[in-house]
Length: 101
Image 1 (tube, rainbow, N blue to C red):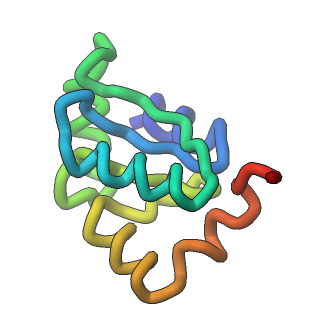
Image 2: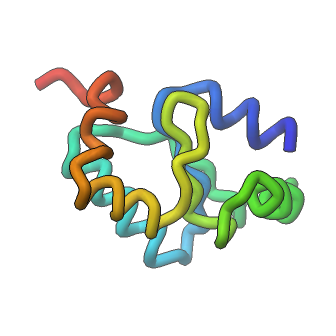
């Protein structure tokens, strides 16, 4: 769990993902559309991926991926991120991390 928390707090927007996950891809595209470039950790390509997956579940993720952290805090998975976005709550959270255009 230490590795997950360390990685989650190193950047403003962090996404734990699997390279073959279509929901992870959808969340990446959403952030791209919002002008945010998250730091992505593909846990299926990490030697400690299984332990990271278990740590994400212990932190409260319903599914281990995608797991989104903003400002070092767990936001959740696809459902939580999309609900926040549709309710207007995601943009204020990511505004500090949007690319300046």
